[in-house]
Length: 372
Image 1 (cartoon, one colour):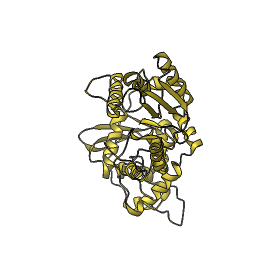
Image 2 (tube, one colour; image 1 turned 180 degrees about the horizontal axis):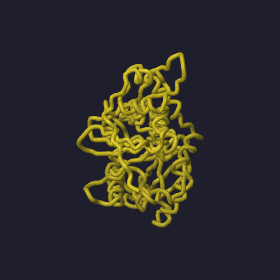
Image 3 (cartoon, helix red, strand yellow; image 1 turned 90 degrees about the vertical axis):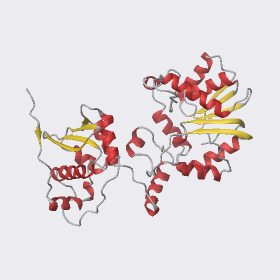
Image 4 (spheres, helix red, strand yellow; image 1 turned 180 degrees about the vertical axis):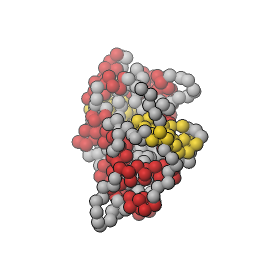
């Protein structure tokens, strides 16, 4: 039986109704989708703080009508009503499947937007999820905190990213300690986890990961026989590459048992047992002296409160004329810590650091930034 599509008339919300809604803290705007920039109005001292579904929906529509200026968004509600916002490219569709989806998101957009998607409360339409997120991010950009606004963010970061020794082990196992079969679905055969280096368009993931290893090896200026420490070695792909191609001895550190076993087995298969050593150990407890230190995609797990200690540890373990190469995924805007959904379900205790925060820790540790 064919479905009849109903397109709602242009939005003209009642001002008094919107004002009533805005007085309620519990009903923050439903679609503040950069995973987290929303209205935070104190509720009145009278009546219920729970808004009706109609108010939530109207406020969400008003927000989208006001904010969508880049791209085009087509919103389909459970009632069958369809609303269109913006124009031009990219085009995206947002299908709200359950009546309470917007209300659920409104309670805590940063966390519940992702949870509502996982629960099937909303979905992307024919254009897919990526264009939808692109449209929402374009129109709800990150807002940098300044001055006193940073204080609550910094407090949350320090509480969430303390990453004491036991916590770091728990966080590592939460993500990396899952069955290797999961990671084999989306990693290259050598199980390199972090950013590949696409030197030219069209090359495979495996080629791009090998290019990254070559790039890192060249930057480290390795000499045969040197001792190298790999902090956060993963499944040992980079360590084996450096040991094999540069004829150095590499010690790799990880906190996940399956990664340790995978790295040891990889070295055994490639005949690198004598040139590599893999340990289940936190970088803060490791003792050693190295000509070179490398860390790829691990610094995101260090946590802001530990930045200085991290670089002090590197200085302690590095030879006087040694070189350290630290690779991390960074950000240009102070977001006040990781998105709560990502932190809860994917990477607990992690964050993408600011270069300014990294620099302060490097200088405090007495190291020199020679190349960025």
